[in-house]
Length: 327
Image 1 (tube, rainbow, N blue to C red):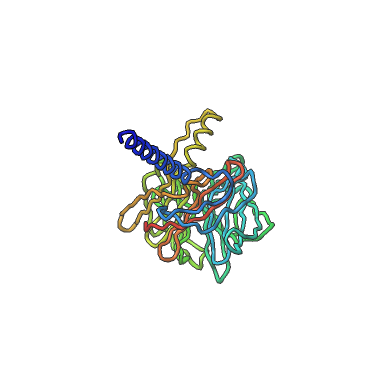
Image 2 (spheres, rainbow, N blue to C red):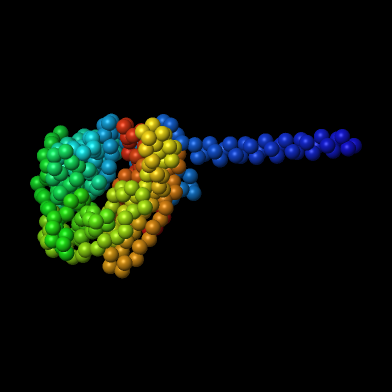
């Protein structure tokens, strides 16, 4: 009788051990990074919802930001460091995972830290930093220009503004614009004395500002991780920061003898009227390869969209997500 009971107990023990191991394996499998360049499905617990699956752009260029109008998405890439040469790829989606694309090039513009657009009489104007010096990618002005495929702009667009700090009086560098969703205001970000500053301007007809007449000027603390873009919505500025995934940084540091530090993706909302600030760590895209945040857009209803880069450092692809949390 005792022998029979022992057999039953041992069978129950092995069954329990097997189930535990199987469940553990399943959990690990769910979090495993997908090595192929695809956009994995997001579980219900994720902060993110997939909007645009992996979009392949030209290789050996580094994706920096994105924007969109009612018809197209626009992605901007840096061709190589410290020269200011950029490429904008215009994409029209024709269903989930299907799209057509064309491009235009920008010479001696800047680093492409931010890209945005305004709409004027049904026509889209793109905005980014411009006018960098030879051998540098530090922008010294902001430019607006219409998209024209298979063309090249040199140094600046049809509209260009140098931005003076309204208190200091001198012209700022590393300047980048973001446009409000209703096309009535533009925020210009720049860095000075290790802080980031913003000046808010009224935008006339989606194209014109008075560079010396901002309606607001303020500074906020630097982001915890690498700054990856910003947007303007109402009386709030939204910033995004973060690094690629840990596994990439570990291999990168080992190969290049570096000490890059991992930072999670964070979105900050700063209300420049009230001074209220909120930071949120975004949890999602856990199985996406590479997984570096690059760009943020806030649209009608205060819905937040972000871009993650996938694949590899030198052959990057775009993935667009909607943030399900209110920020």
